[in-house]
Image (cartoon, rainbow, N blue to C red; front, side, top):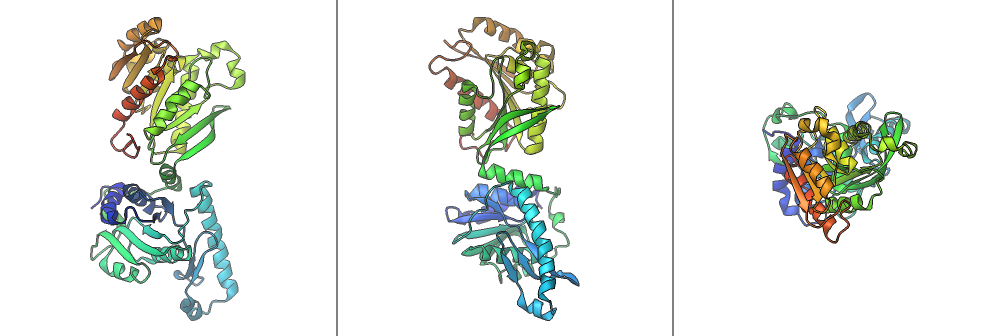
Length: 427
């Protein structure tokens, strides 16, 4: 029995390791097959994609397929069934039109503009979370061949032996972890068989392929511009909270963000205030307002990428906002890093922060250093004060920002939940 689809995927990947290094594409059947395929693709270092298939059912017997369709106009027909059912071209066209519309809807929702991986001349590993009769995955094999795959391998955590034999009529090989003689339902072989949504499928594709997008974050009646970068395989996003007089374009934050990307961590840099709001100096020091905007940005991020782990990196007054937001009950922030921060501005909330917190201060930034020492005494969570020798408030000295980046990277990766950073190249 498998704990969940992720564990099933890891166990399946062990059987597929001989294919590592070959010209392979892993294709998950939405929706349940994609989390399994994600683990396989990650383990063998292969690109991940979905294979979208719609069976074409005989109008009076929809369970009997006279063919299947895939993306890019691919159509596979069973002429024996067409002849036996005496199907007219117009009947077939009606069925195909309906199924084509649904396939295109799913493609747009899941891919979000990402191109389909080219299968021409490659080995396609078609993955599902379990196979009972195999009708859908047989159609997927046919579609993969029509899309140019030179070899097709069916891979699944659980499949009855008689079904595996039938699948070899369509696939070059069939790989299974468990082959029970009786399979009344696939879910019986999983402790957690929670339904997978199309949003989660899209997110898993983003994690493998990576993404870099200009985004707009809804914050009440305002829309705040931001930049979301998620490297290939990243499962953690560090949200940057800039300080007074700064913005998402801050060269210092961008430098640190680049270091996070190299460590396999995603980043979200966004403006906490609109252009009009920034003209009022009081807003820049309104920590409650800034923390509220950060909370709204975090909600947006979790809705957009539901399964990422969230961390905060705050600078100057932004550090106070990060700590204030992290103190909100059930904030579920994995870790907080403050660079040259003003945690004293969140003094009333410091005792409520549960996320492990690192305070980084320049050794020559003496006033802020004393403020951080006083604030550290109020923290009840795991915490550390790191002093960068010879650095001032802006860390402009040679090697200062490199030291900040290294400290932040180590703090974040050390405090992530198990599995949240294992895909990053240096995590």
